[in-house]
Image (tube, rainbow, N blue to C red; front, side, top):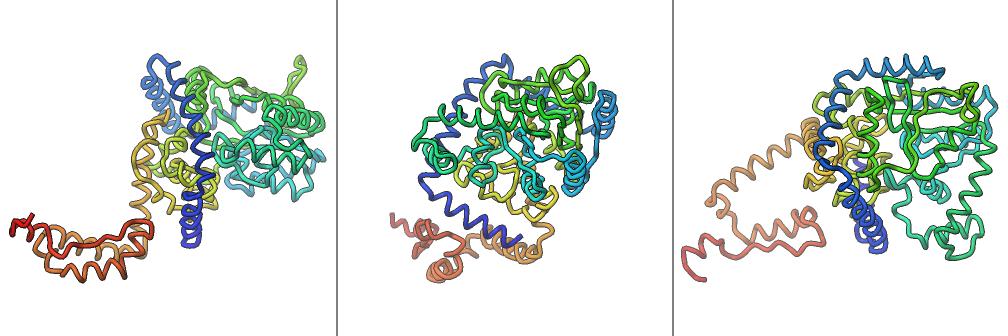
Length: 458
C-alpha cells in the first residue's frame, strides 16, 4: 500500500503541473460538460427520474440474489450458456476452454471496463489470439499500448494532434491527418477484422432479469458488428448490472446517455436475448454469458457500502471531480478511477491495497450531486476513510496528536504559552514537509492577536 500511495503522490504532482495535459483534459471534459448541461433539459423532471432510478437500484440490491437467479433461468431458456465466475482466474479459464475448443485465432471486442479489469487482452495475447478493440477510443489506446483513461472516454487524455501522430507512426497515415480521415481508416481496417473474427467479446450495460436479456448501448455501431458476425459471443458482466424488468431500460438508457455524453439516447441500443434463431440472418451461433463477482459481493455484504453497486458507469462523477480534473485517470493505478473508483477499488479483487484513494478527494460533494442514481459518494468516501484509520497501525499516534491538538486549541492561554519563536522553528523543521513546498511559509507573529488587542496597538 505504501509504495502505491507514494507512486500516486508522485504521479499526481507531476500530472497536476503538466500544463499541456491539463489543457487537453480541461478542454475535453469541458466539451462533455456543455453537452450534458444541454442534454439534461430533455428531462421534464430530472430529479424525479433520478429518484426513480435510485429506488429501482435499491430494489435490485434488496432482491439481488433472486434477480440474478431469475436472469440465469431466463437466459438459459433463451438458449444462452450461463457461467458463474468468482474471480478473474475463473473467467479466464472459461474463455480459455472456449478458445481451445473452437480454435479461435481472432477476437473482436466491444468496449468493456470489466474486460480491462480482467486484463483479457493480455490473456489472449499469451494464448496466441489476436484481439482488436473496436470502439475508436479503445482502439486508439490499445494502439498506443495504454489502458483506458476514463470510464466512458478511453482516449480523453489525447489531442487530435497526438492521435494523428500515432496513426502516422503505426500505419503511415499522412502527418496531421484529420479526425474524419483517421475514423475512415479505422472503419475499413476493423471491417476486415469483424469479417474474419471467430469470437466477439462484450460487456453488459444491463442484465434484464425478466427476459434473460443483455442490454448494450454504444455510439459507433461496432458493438452490433461484434455480436452479429462472429460465430461465438462471450458476454462478461459484473453481477451488479442486473435490473428487474425490460421496461426499466426506458428510464436507465436516457439517464445513462444524458449523464455520460449529453445525448437523449445513444445512437445504438441493443437487446440480446440469446444466440441466432433459425429465422434470423445475423447473430452468433453460441452465446456465453459469464456472471463475474470479482469482489462485488464484498461490497454487497457491507450494508454501509453496497449503494456503490448502484453505479451505471456513466462517468459523470469523474467529469465533476476537481481531483480527477487535475490528476487525470492513470494516476489512480486502477481500472475504475475518479470518485466511484476510489470508493470501490479497495473491495475489488487484486486492488485491496488501494484504500488510500479515498483520501484523494476534497469532499466537495459534486460527485453525489451529479450521480444519476443518487449514490452518496462523498459519504461513502468518508466511511472508507474511517475504516482505514480504525485499522491503521498509526491510529494511536494520530489520537495522541489530535487529543493534544484539541487540548491546546480549546484554550487560548495554553496555545499562547508556546513562544512564537518555537512555533516558527517547528514549522521550518517538522511542519515544512506537511505544509508543502508550493505554499507560502506559515510564519507566526511575534505577538498573538489577543495580546495585541489588549495593548490596542493597531
